[in-house]
Length: 228
Image 1 (spheres, rainbow, N blue to C red):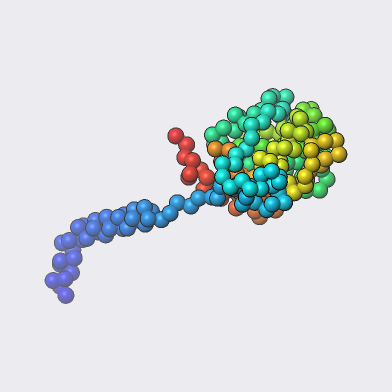
Image 2: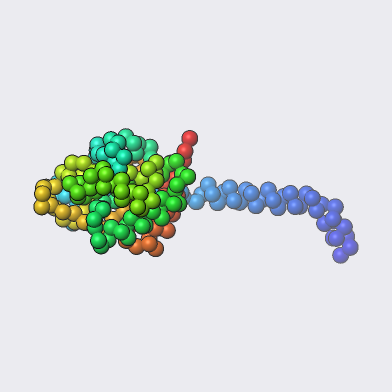
């Protein structure tokens, strides 16, 4: 017994170092073998057909958000290029909505608070009543809701363009229509978009508990698209 104690004392440093090295090697092997978590890349054929325009229901690959050009709460022209190489969350709302929109805006505000210092992540809200939501109206709403201009654009503009984006790009709306005077869309969906303009997730924007899942998925995307 005394021999064993003496032996351990003499080789304590060596044994400790060996144990640490072995642990590091095991961790490295585990991380190398562990598959990286990735979010699905949503194609029209993968989404509930009610949310997909009939012209797109057969599409199984290459779906991306179409180019757009609209006006934000500060009267600035915002295009898809402003979101190039960014991760962002999009939704469709209107400032006079008395039902789901206040909940959605509050939850988008929670996301904004979490990402306010993160240069890779942005927010984007399209008004579905652009004839009501002028630049001035959007600005009042933005101030009231605590929108940070550098993080979150509220967009207005051509109604047909916005409605086509909702139905054919973001796959967010169950109803069909032509974006005309009597056409109206109402959706609770938040859509997560990657830096390649691909849809990576859908979330119930009225459910505060789902925001944790959304934030977690944003982190997963950031691992897939690390900043240089």
